Length: 355
Ligand code: COI
Image (cartoon, rainbow, N blue to C red; front, side):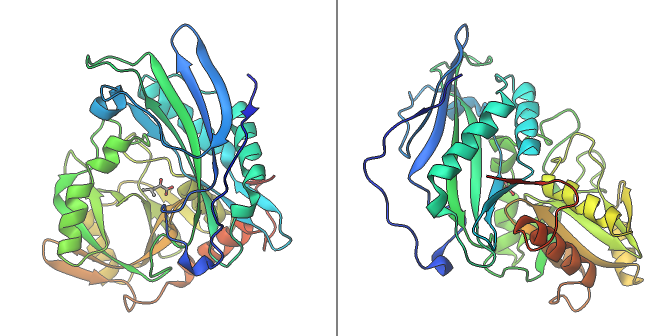
């Protein structure tokens, strides 16, 4: 398929003061779009000015949420070059999600080529200051007007770009986590491992309740026994137990996070033992109280690594360290991962793709 580049008539002013970059609020001048129709396949791939879509009010995505999305980042390196971090992994996961949501798969190599072209055109928007990056949001939505419940016949795939600062205003400051004994995020056989909007919409109610109680995030337990750790908010979660990194296994209910994968690979490379296994709330509380579990942190593309300061469950709280300081293992993993992403450290794993 050919990629058309449409003219851009008007440019928005760049954000000169990068301390004014917020997550997900400012978008660049251009976007990538392509369309799909059953019988015709993917067509009309183009880079065009960033603009609103005109969608029929009966478009399937608006009613039955047939949609998926991705999140990845481009980083400005000290020499000015721009690097993508593991973009092939994102497009592979995009197609995995497309299959699960009965949507047409995309050509991964074509998506990557189009993304690179888009970023080259928008290169001025890739910020330069410490901790900033260009957040990339590919998405696929069902666009045909149809109120019957069945896989749609028309889709829109698009990529938008967003220069960002830190996801949390507090940066790497440890967060307070509320463990819900009531709400669950995903059940076996459901869509928990898919990056689909419904999972995120369904998490809002519990997140609001947590915020009202003064917590930053919700820790989700498994739906079957409400006993085992799954994810935190929209992040995977890892625990440092003695010289091991312990995290929930990928069994269909949690996202196969690319930051999670990178952190596990880095930790293994640095000589830490990795355990992907079910970890119960009782084990976390016992482990922290007895000094075996010393650190915990969430991982995700948007947040990178987010240290946990405390967990509260059914009125009982455990504090990791002093609850305010990032632990040494977490800090080391953060420094190594961001060092590779920003080009301050070598990339022995072949994760970085220069533009
Ligand atoms: C990401 O970490 O990239 C995500 O997609 C999470 C989102 C809720 C910001």
